[in-house]
Image 1 (cartoon, rainbow, N blue to C red):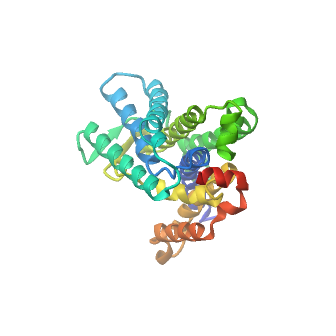
Image 2: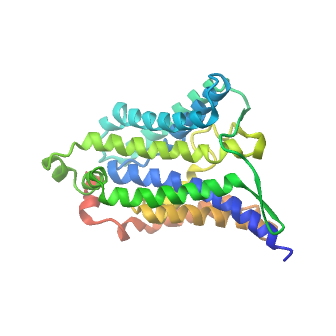
Length: 309
């Protein structure tokens, strides 16, 4: 029973962190599957939403809830703009060039975010949801951790059927599987690619807003210099989650996000040698997934050809 409270508290934090990984991974997979871009600018675009939230609440006098909604929308618009102005004009046949361009966009987004925040080492942001302690036995967890985990689950449960059965979702899948056939069927490839970028980027903005404004509990959260780097704290583990499904399987990306989050935090309870090397273990796992080429288990041949076209 002595370990019960720490296990519950660490698991709760892991689920909240896993929710962030899951939402980021969902956006990464959607963008890659539809447009073939390994989006290393994902964090930077989501960061624009977080900065917009800060500016709206601290300088614009907008209520936190409305500011959060507007910030998510702004992330989506930023992603759509990035596709229209940059990635639409780059051929998908050269992945190295695409990755370098994505890294450039990520660096640009990070610098602009730092500038808008006044190049401060830390920036305090207020929470947009009520923060309360929930007691489970001797364990105390934050209500926002429950909200983050529940939000990711609800969004995934709504998004996956929508992606499979809705008209827009079917068009996105058609573009992913065979761009030429989709164009012949009257589907505008660029329009639906822009929609994929908008949705994926909005998910990135929401992911950041579900955790960073609550890092200090009821007092709010802190944007540090780590968050204003191109990859932040969460993008690399989110890529690991996306790679669980080979960057193409949406349900496995969500599951991978939660597994990564909980496993990383549970390692805190491990012996010191392991607990201090959580990031190293995660990096090794990501390399293993890359070398395994797991996408071959989930993508049909037509879709693989479309990604390479």
